[in-house]
Image (cartoon, rainbow, N blue to C red; front, side):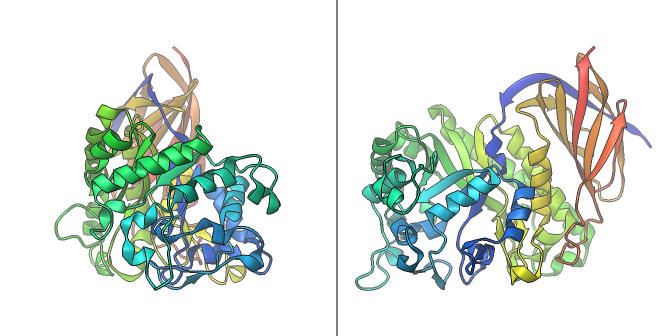
Length: 479
């Protein structure tokens, strides 16, 4: 087998945010049972089987709310359970019980040691069809309500929270103002959204000046948002839902099963869409010194449950390539995700929960396996590595330990390489490898099909199997 070379320059380039492995939690009601499937309504706690799987995935940050935030009134979901007010889920249809609210969300984050991120209701993002759906109903919330939420979470002396039985503050540091505001022509325009974001940010910071605030800046809004509200915000949020980026894509319905070589080609090119998206956002925020937060992102493919191709190992390999894009842009990208976390229908979730959960074991989707793998084996600082033609490689380090994330983009052939670290000698290390048939589709009957294989090695040579994703930890000493 012909041998390639991966040359690694160990000089640190920039620090990597731990929040490149974020997940987000949003009650989706009729669309996907999501939060409801994970919550044990009898015992008033998170289902232990769900929590075991989430702890294995180990997300570093969890966001509360998406479109749901635009009509969410947080006070309806705190305090005694019998006093909580169920709400219409205007985007996703159905009714949400509000038995999971601020306390339960923060408790979830504490159990898995993740940073909570909360999206506030910014006057329904100007969407009057959500704010005033029925006579006498108001689902819009202003700056004062957002500031009260910050106080409820972070003020040690907040009377309401203490009355509800929590003497210690929740210390929620990250807050997002507005969600997908630019996507609906019936909502705020850019100028109005930026002005309202500034008003919200000022009120929220009066309560706690230390919080980190994220403003919505997608659809070309980033520059104006920075100009108007930049003095009060830390990051600009955007979302990215993508396909293959190629014409005549087979990534829909069951079409992808007819010619899997063609499917593989399209999946392997999807990373280019993410590269272009982040490049666009970088150009907009760079003059203002703001970081980026991709608080939602995943494949958006038509077909049953958002297309079952996302349960294939080929999709896992594609997602790994996209995570490499995130790491390469870690100098400006502070928060990123590639999944909708958990549910029981949508293939875009990181975790699928068989329902009822007491009769099944929650399991990771391919995207979840790869996020888990990279999350556990990554350094604190990004460094450089060369990419042989068939491989996609990113590198990082912590001290003298070098970490490689390697994707073999070849569907039918392994690739043998020699590893070289400038100025250092490789003593050996450990590889954590996922390799499977690209067309294999994971289900609850095969929940561990993509479990990484741990392999120790000595020396500086390695073979990456076909269609594989590998995280390597190299033990190095100065040469």
